[in-house]
Image 1 (tube, helix red, strand yellow):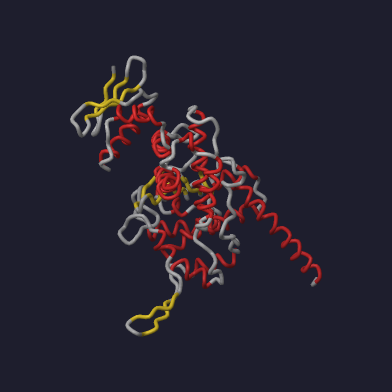
Image 2 (spheres, rainbow, N blue to C red):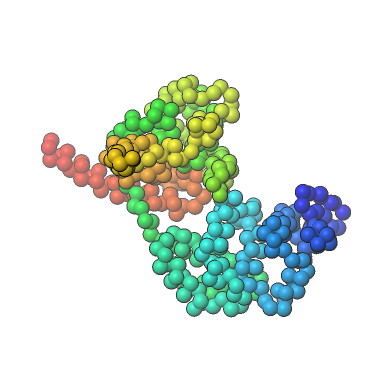
Length: 396
C-alpha cells in the first residue's frame, strides 16, 4: 500500500490500484471519501473541495452529506461542484486555472443563483428556457452563451451518470454569439504609424503581435532563450501569461498546437536583434519586455489610455491618448484594439496564400474553425485587389 502525506489530508494507493482519500475534520474525527478514485489527481481534487468547505465554514461530515443526497436527491449546485472538481480536458489533463476561474464565476453569478437549489431531476427544458431568457435580458451575449454551454456540459455529465433521464439543454444555437466588435484588420501603412508612435522599448511587442500573430500573453512571457536570431530566425512560443482572479500566472498553452516555432519575417530580424542588444539583459531567462517593477509587462501599460476631458480643481483639462490607444488614434484607427493586431497578422499571413494547415500551425490553433475566419477575410480582400488592378489598367 502506497501512502502520501500532504498539507491537508492523506492519500493511499490500495492493492486494487485505486486511490483512497481521507482527512481529519474540524470535529477531530477521521473522514474518508465516499468512494475511491482512479488517480491521485482526482483524489486531491476531492480533498481540495473538502478543505474549501471547511474554510467557508460550510463543512459537514462527508458521510452525512452522502446520506442526505440519497434521501432527497442531489441538487444542481452540489453536482456542479463535484463536476468542477473532477472535470478534465479532452486530453485528460486538469483544467487550466483561468478556465477553472471562468467556470466558477459563471456558476456563481449566472447559473446557481437561479437553478442551484433545484434537484437535478427537477431541472426541466421549460425552466432552462426561462432562465436563458432572463440572462439574455442582461445584454451580455458572450457570457450568456458561455453559461448555457457550461450548464449543458454539466447536465450532459449528469445524464451519463444516470442521475437524469435527458439533458434539458436543447436550445439550438444558444452557445453561439455574434461578436460585438467587428475587426477591421490594420493595413501595413497603419501598422507603420502605430509602431512609430510607441515608446521604443515597446515597438517590438507591437510588431510581434502584428507580423507574427502572437497573443499579448505569449509576447509578455517571451524570454531571451525563446528567440533564435542566429540560425533560423524564429520564436519558440511555449508559455503565456494569463490573469486569474487579478493575479498574473505563467502557464502553458491550452493545447499542444499552441506550443510552436514561429518564423520571424526577415524585415523584422534587425529590429529583434537591436531590441535584444538594447533592452534585454544577457541571461537566458531575461524577459523581452518588462513592466515598471521589472516583472511582466501589464497589458494596461502597453495599451495606455484613450484621450479624455477631465475637470480638475475647476479647470477643464484635455488629456491626450497614450500607449497603443494613442498610437492607434494617430493612425486614424481609434477602433483598433490590442488583440486586433493578432487578427491583422493572421489576415496578412492568409493573404500570402498560406494553406489552412499552415495558418493553424503559425497561429497555434488545434482546430480549423478559427483559422478559417482569416482565410475568409483574405478572400474578401481579393475582391479589393481585383478592383485596384482594374484601376491600374484604366490609368495605363
